Structure formats: C-alpha cells, structure tokens
Image (cartoon, rainbow, N blue to C red):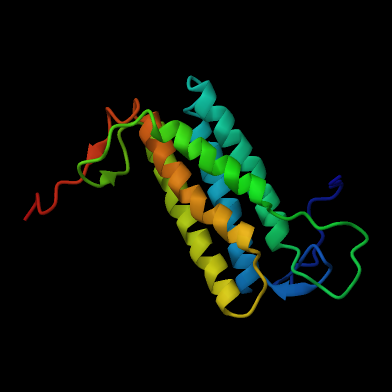
Length: 191
C-alpha cells in the first residue's frame, strides 16, 4: 500500500529523483522520461473522461486503462536490481495486454471501416482521446529508446503501450458517435 504523508521531500532539489528500488537518477534520465510520459498519457485520459460520463462502457474501460498505466509507471520505476526490495515489484503482465486487445475488438466491431485518416476532433471526448493517443505514442517511443539503450523493459510493458495507442484511437472514434462524427483527412485540400 502506498502511503504519502509529506508531498515535498526536498531530495529532488539537486535535479535527481528516486526510483522505486532506491536508486537515484537524474530527472532527465531516459527511464524517468519514459514513466513521465506514461503519467502524462494517464493525465490526458483523465481529462478525456470528463466527457465520457454519458458513455459508461467506454468510461469503465478508460478507468481500467488509467489504473494499468499506474502499474506501467511502477514497472518502469522499478528496474531490475541486485538489491533486495523487500516486496515483489509490480509488473505489467500478459493478461493486461490481452484485456486491452479484447476491449479494442469490442469497440472496433461497432465502427465502420475508414475511408481516410481521422483528424483529431469531432467531439471534446474524441479530441482529448486523440491527444492521449499521441502522448501514449511518445511514451512508447521513450520506452523503446530505453530498451535500445540497454535498460530492461519487459515485453509485456512494450506490448501494453503499443496496444494503448490503438485502443485510444478506437475509443476516440467511439466517442464520435461510433465514428459518425469523425473528421476525415482530405489530402491536399488546401493546396
């Protein structure tokens, strides 16, 4: 259980932050950037949810995703270490990826096939979900870069963040009255 009594600790005044395993890293560290982008995606989903209260099925899915994003942040904030932690670190698992895939499929079946790319917009919920999608794609790029730099990022974590942008794209279309209010790209329209 997480217990936060004091919000500021002053330990980050030197530009460093503590990972969950106790290790200190610069706030500009690739791992910190990755879980920071995950947090930003979660915040954007929270903003989108202000407009999804009248869509209970979608809103419940988004709430589950927000919780899973906290799990992903905890996973990224706890790199494998030789030091004993005294607890089992929280990791993204295959069942979370599978659930996200199932929810993508459940939403996508309601949508007609696209004839063009979709511009972010149509409704406030859809626009906010597209913003969350773009942020989640940045988080994915950061996680891939982190892994490419030799840091351990689990395959389920990478799969989850990759599926998340697909989920948010489909969710944005559902929020546009199942795609009826999608704004389609018209290539070269303003030449």
